[in-house]
Amino acid sequence: AASVENSRLVGSGEIQIGMAMSSVSFKAYKGEVDPFKGTPQPILGLFSMYPAPQHVLTLDPNIKSIRDLKGKKVSVGAPGSGCETISRLIIETAGLTYDDMRISYYSQPEAAQALKDRNVEVVFWNFSLPGSAVSEVTAVRDVYFISVDKDIVEELTSKFTYYKEGKIPANTYKGQDYDVVAIQDGNDVVINKDIDENTAYLLVKTLFENAENIFDVHPSAKKLIPENGVKVGIEMHPGAEKYFKEKGLL
Image 1 (cartoon, rainbow, N blue to C red):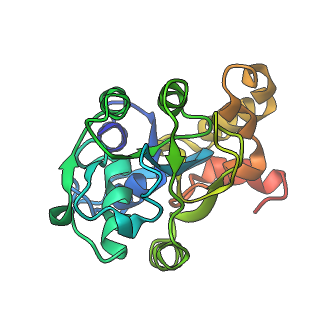
Image 2: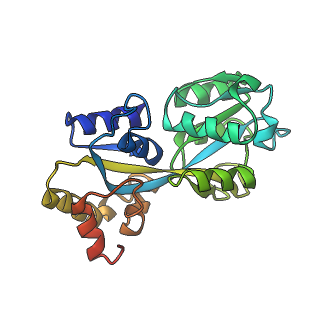
């Protein structure tokens, strides 16, 4: 999965900066996830880019809750990815296991096609808003979005600090005229801890002081503001810390 590989590359020094979901970078930083088990990675947080709520989609209007997934054909994301990690936790917190359903580990494009073709009944996806693969499906199918049950949200967000309660606001997608409750991960930029303070400071300062230049690239770009950037999921690099202190956010 990209977040695992980027955490590895940054930690090894093969690259200096990379993107990773907050949940994965936290576990890499702590040495709590394969292939880093027992070997904390020398990475620090530079800034957080935007939240990524976990989407749970179906074409079946009778599937209204995570607890309705028993016996269903479900795509949970690529094995070991941040998406699949959240999918598994949501399912297990609902009192189910993968053995209770027919699981597929489709990539995003594969899952979109499988849902359109009705080869799966439920898809878990982790996207910033709006997700292109979701829009691809809603363009040709009537899609129902499943809110995560309140007790599941409360248990996961209290147990794992990098997950937050989020929502997919009404009208984010075609035919979605209601808010959807979601578990939300973050998308962080991590940096090798050996990068000097001034370089890290200038990187963060330059990005946020010029972020409006990329606001039109994707709707998520509008979330690149210091108030969101400070919400990085692991220990922050001193250079980034300096910038956010200047902005009065730390």
